[in-house]
Length: 470
Image (cartoon, rainbow, N blue to C red; front, side):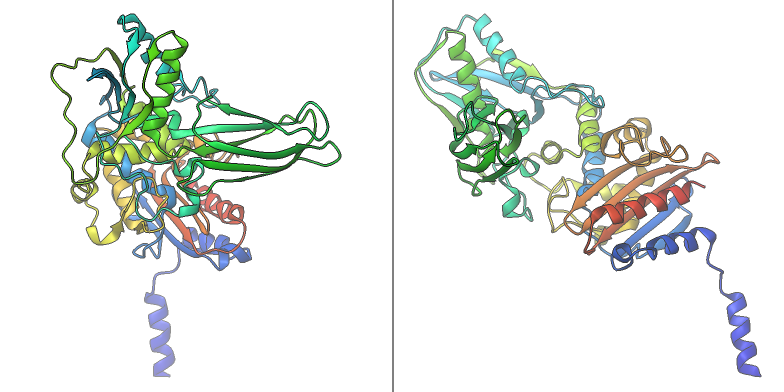
């Protein structure tokens, strides 16, 4: 009888699983797709650090856009909420030079961020600069219009980005001179008559791509459009069919050379104003390891655009998960790519053996982080002097950003502030839960290696958050 009594004593001494743990495990086991995925979870009291639940919290996961938590925290602490940059236009040796300094919002985006705001005029910033140039009295540019992005070394695609991403807007190339998020829209609508070629329209109307339009108007069938652009190529092709009167379909493309894109836009705006431009539009880049380009002292700016405060762009990054902007913030914090995250995360108490980042947006498949590293960062930021600004960056459950259509139930609406993340076979959510008793929980839920609808995983993630509210 000694052995059974010993086992009974051991069972009595072992801590019983908490109700929260039991409910989380039951939620994960409730359907096939979540049940076969790899889950990493840590839920902790944001103030005391006491862990309420953990599973694989010290294992590595691909974080997807949860990496933006680290980037935006770095920007907020190191650069500060009021940090601004200036985009300037100068005349140099007969050329007109638009010099980017890392302003992500040379676009028609509404600032401050507002749910459902219209996209605005993509050339609003360029038109502002062109108006200033015209007001300066310039009437002729004898040379070229140069887009200068030498404030950052020219490394448009971070390590770990997939080649098939680079043609579309989610992986727009990184540059210190970024116009309209370095993207352009292609709208395809039906022709006037049956069998006519479809009507194509670029927005903004800048000659970036050589387009082969093989779409025919055919009202006998439903719209069936296809798009192709090889990475690094300025040639694009569309084919298929579209009915007459169809409202059309828009493809959003990443531009190939952002600095040249901005130069083309500025040149076109000047010509429309009657300013003669003799030369072409071209780009000026700086190779990694080469010294920064120095503006000549005798070349004062004839036009300047000042960015919104950094806080406003950090909010855009986290609310809508803007990849390009996250990459630009990382480079603003360290223009020569000196890995600024390491010192900051050491200060935040995140061990350097719990993360690896090769980009700032989380688009890289080489990024890895543990759930515990994420909650450590979240606890640090919640205790920092920037707490209120930091919390204001995150999407709010059932209210705005990437959580506007999630957590619609009254029990959870407005009580969760968190950053989403999504790649193929990856779904993540990390942030804060405000419990009914007023306590703030820091949590990280990182899910990898599932084979099925991502919506099945998100449903369980949301269920876990709702359970943790109670």
